Length: 475
Image 1 (cartoon, rainbow, N blue to C red):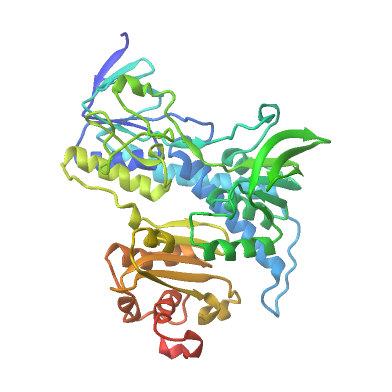
Image 2 (image 1 turned 120 degrees about the vertical axis):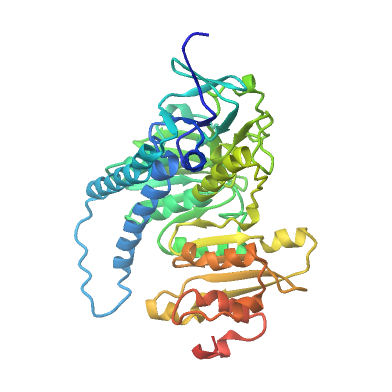
């Protein structure tokens, strides 16, 4: 085996959230570390998916598109709503500049300050459990973390090899809006892109395989969100099984089986939001004894250790849930477990997640169905946001909050919110689930008036009384 041989105390494979969190922790501990990072896809450069082709650019475009849609609604009287012409190319130009600035500030500059970390911009692959080959460099290390992330998964459909389709990466870089688009997938990514394009005036058709969108969420959240998305013009088709994809008359077409009936959908573009697959093909995992699970992601235990001694994994490469903050927590935790014998485990039940439609959806803890499967006698109290005074003040009464509790102890087991800024509101629920708070603890906590966060307190109070008969000062 030829090459320049270098020895490190720690090797991190990856350059995204999990990898950076691990590198920062290792640097704090004074560990001689090599970070081997290279883009698995064209867009996921230094910083990984979230900053480059995920959270940051998509949420920026959703914000702009929602703002434009809000202007069209003319929600408030006494204002001049002359919108003018949309310059989408300029919107993308500003979006790209935002990404570049944050990549420099949060990743390039941070990396420069990590004095114990050496960045190697190569694709790394295992030679054995303690050896990585990265270009012409051979790296030896006892401790290794795999954090190579994931990319868009494309379903195998008849004819797909003959057309040009979009994933999240291509969709975020288009400088011209299509007149119509078919979004395949009705979970977080698909819903966000559907709303993004609809807000910009694109005709959107969303195809979802299951009976409802976001099938793993509370049914009330799914039902209300479906209604809101349809109100802005998105056509949502559920129970859709894809049969064939093709090009017809200058448009792209999908033939889908809808409960036994074949239906053809046409649009200028097709975007696949059908899950993600792990970036593992180039790692030569077999040489290190690292195994994959049944879904093709790296198999880990509760403390993030793989099936190989001294090799850990963190972030999207380990599978769902794929969240930037969770990836960072895992990278930090894995490093602590390796070098500090911290013996920490990740409790996924206390990790919040969100969907950045508008209104937003957010959840933490268990659903009612999950609680019942655990044979806990639960109680639930969904509350519409029309009962929250701030909703009337901002002129948007859409939304619902649902608290799931243990009926015996009143302990909060899950919180589920659909409302403007739900992703910000969920953190009180996160603390409640994490620390085993009860609805009485929430009720006894003074909330600022008027705020949307009062919704959680009102939902807690609704277990005891009729909220519609209370005054504002009852809160």
